[in-house]
Image 1 (tube, rainbow, N blue to C red):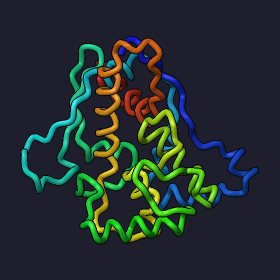
Image 2: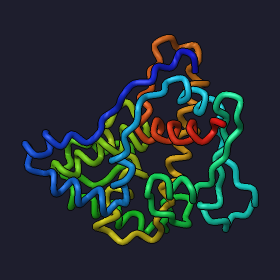
Image 3: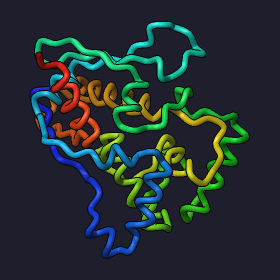
Length: 228
């Protein structure tokens, strides 16, 4: 983690949204996704605390039961000399995320293909996981919200393609999906993936990860809780 740079990421720019005349659309969209509180959080950047959190974070399910609700998961971490833990349910409450029970966006193959076909209502092409281009999305508000989700919620450096998780998140207000995944758990999995990325690329001197404001806000809150 010592070679990883912590950089600010894309967040809501209300002036630009007003110029594009999509502020109301973006605000409505984010509210329907249950992400309003997440994108309103403001905090200072604590680079060292963020690195300590991300270098130690782990995801655990105390009761190894396949039917266990996603909210029963735990994030384990260490900041300074203090060991900490927070449940996925508490993480959802912290960021105002919907606390669903499903671990992932899973649907039977027939329904999944039908859902993917519905993407043509949003873009000029059928949906292909991690291959569909953001530039093909026709509505500027949807493109904007995708970038917000991609560069903050999923901590991606590039927001050119739409992943399966992003597809399900973006279409939630418009398409009735069979399952609604727990967004807190998806965020927790992002933390784990970033940690693995840093470990896999440990020898890469040019590695730079733009950890989203979600990560920095989370560390800010937990850093305060971990102090005497």
